[in-house]
Image 1 (cartoon, one colour):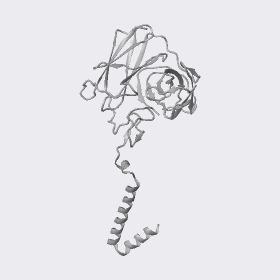
Image 2: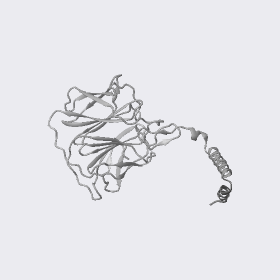
Image 3: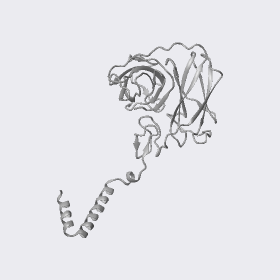
Image 4: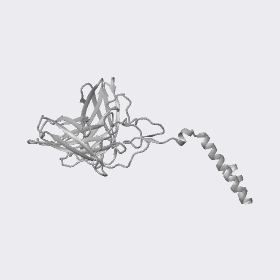
Length: 322
């Protein structure tokens, strides 16, 4: 026990009232020292956090270093909004259609007309075919009552539409809809491991994972290496975007690098929920050109290497699994 505390303890035995007064004096002095040592701007400053990556916090306003979202002082509890989608004309292969999205609040089903920017856009739409051969990422435009998106689906079959938007004074939304294109759908081939280097429009991209064989429900690191790295630019506010889809289209995950600085290497922190094969589309920009490449990552139920599996239905979505 330090000598000062020993003296105070001895005084307590001798004179109880005096000890109480002495202890209170010491507490006030200690509190004054702490207050003096801590800048008042930090003591009284609000805490800013990212509405998507809530582990990112700051005492000053700014943008999330991971996803680029504007930091806010509070994030409402997540509630799912209602999304209505209409496609005109009836979808046919390689025929342009207009997809119209209307958003309604979950309390009174009133139309929502005010939205925050999500990665520099008010609305992001991803379309993925059931066989995972078709992928597109577009930005529907606001007409005052709904978002409209012109797109063409290349072949018959089922497509999942993933809508990413952020209603004002609420939480970011990631919702799905389904489109069927008339005709005989081609057979779906099982996916297998594909870590081969991919050539984009003006970059080559390599992938590795740690552990080598990711396990469902366990953290995994997905690292990409870009060559050449000269001229890399942020795309929609971040160094790269990733959409991961399970081979049965049940799990959809939108993620961004947890480690990236514009150099050749980037790291995504992932948590694959199930033992499936996942296709990962990576989008990045170099010299104004957006590159899209994909890899197929088998995820095991345990430490044994996984095998390719068949497909099924329905969808589960999440933001930033890492």
